[in-house]
Each structure stands twice: as C-alpha cells, then as structure tokens.
Length: 348
Figure 1 (cartoon, helix red, strand yellow):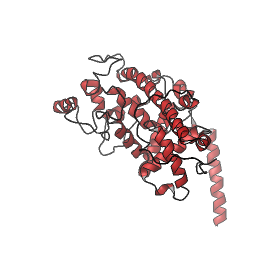
Figure 2: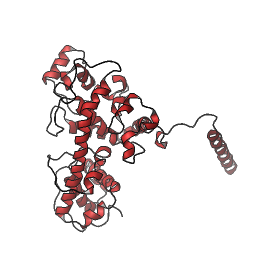
Figure 3: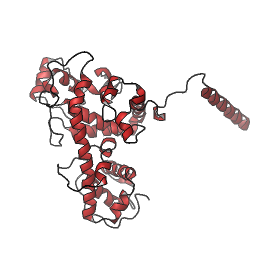
Figure 4: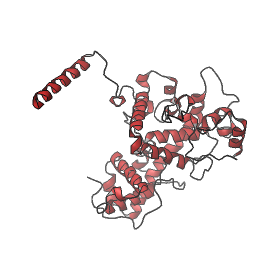
C-alpha cells in the first residue's frame, strides 16, 4: 500500500508547520502508538508537532497526485519525508488514518506526540546526570562540582560546560568573551555550533568537516549504555539501540543526539521552543539542513560510516575494508580478473 493512494477523509485545512514543537499538552488516552513512537522521536525527527504533521501530510497526499512533491517548498518536502518515514515505521498507520475521522486523525497525532514527548523527557532526565560522567576526565573531578539534579550552574556559568558550549570561532579563554556569554550580552544563535561537536574540541577553519560530529561524547546513552562511552568492549557497545531492533545509525538520528547533549550541558531547565537561550529548534534544523544538502553527501556518508563503526562495530553498515591476502580478497580479485578478460574479448 503506497502513501499516494486515495484518502477518503481529510482535514479541511493545513495547520502550522509540523516540523516545530507544539505547545506542551498532556494526552490521557493509552494507545500502542505512545510506546511504539518513543523511538521514532529519537531516530527520525525529534522536534515535531505531530498532529500538524499528520493532518498536513494527509492533505498533501491528495495534492501530490497532480503536483510532484519536488514542486512543493523545501519545508513541506522535508515534512512529507518525515511523514513517510513515520508510515514505514508503523505498519497499518496509513489505513488507520484513511478510515478515521478528522478528530481521529488529530487524536492519532496527539498519541504519537505523547510518545515522542515521553522519549524526550526520559532522555533529558537521563542525560542531565550521565553527561557529567562523560565530560569528567578519568581519575579527576569536576571543579567546582556540578550538581546532578540541578542545571543552574551549567552552561556558560561553569568553566567546563562553558568551554564545551562556546561557539566555534570564539575564544573561551578570552575573559571578555566569557563574561559576555555568561551575562547574556552576547546571544548565541542556534546556527552557531558549539566546539564540543568536534573531535578533541578542535576546529579547522580550512577544513570545517574535519572531526565534525566525531566527538565520542556524542555517542551517548540515546543509542548506547553509559559505560559504552568509556570504551566498554565493542561487542556489547550497541546497548540500548539493540532493544529497538536497530543495526545501523540513521543519519537523522545524529541531530537528535547532538541537540539532546547540547541541552544537557546547558543551564536551561525546560526543553522548549520558547527558550531563546539555547534556540534548540534553530540549532536542530540547521543540522538537518547540512545533512540533507546534496552537495555534502560524501561527507555525510563518511560521517555515517564513522558512527556505525562506533555504535555497531560488527554490523555490515560499518563498511570495513576486506583484509589483504584473505581468502575473500583472493576470490574478489579472481572474479574481477575474469570480468576484465571477458570485457577484453568482447571489445577485441
């Protein structure tokens, strides 16, 4: 069953952009969608107004019968791709939407949103404490100490978290810069990425992809167990990801992880679209813009290979090269030679 099949009942109008968080609201009805969608919020799209996503996309299914999706604005194309991934991850969802009333469609979106919000809350709670272990050097202690159950002293208020969150291009060691960031005189926009995104916290202006998103701090408990970051034997490093049936990292999962870790290091108390201090939505969307840029596909593919090697080292997704002089390499070489000889005979 394709997503372009006829929809019998659709809402009467578009809601606001679905790829923005909707106001916080509790849903009271229990439904399998709630638990099933926990992982969707981690691996496909973290910040989303799910009722709007569902209603907008159902309408668009009718529209793309006459107008190719490529002719829609970029934001709507992204929104529809997220919707199609949602359908792929939940068999039977399209049929449920097709046969439901407008109220049922909105209700389904609210249930999915409840599951995603639960995931975000669980991750935020876990990371608030765990991130302190990950940024503490082995055998050392954070000075002055950071509280596990409070974030008031994090962000630019603390030397360690401030140095990690300092935007690329700024010098945290400069006293005037530190004070401007701490006082709020210098506001950090969401598209000003922090230095902790880079391996060893080193940014190369001549090669800005070098080390980007390769800091081991990012391979966090959203995918792995906490001990994984401390170099637990690779055979068990996949941790929590295996519980969700994952055997490779989806590229859209990386912005989710990065956004959560960035928030955990900050002093912000609530993960909210109205938080101008962290500007999480702008930050998250700026990462997606990079990952979806066709001109960056090679770098993105290389990054995904690196992540798969960290999280799923035994998976085929790691694309490890064949060992030299192995039996498999000899077979491949012999096959290649035979094909070349055949091609030579055909052309001669």
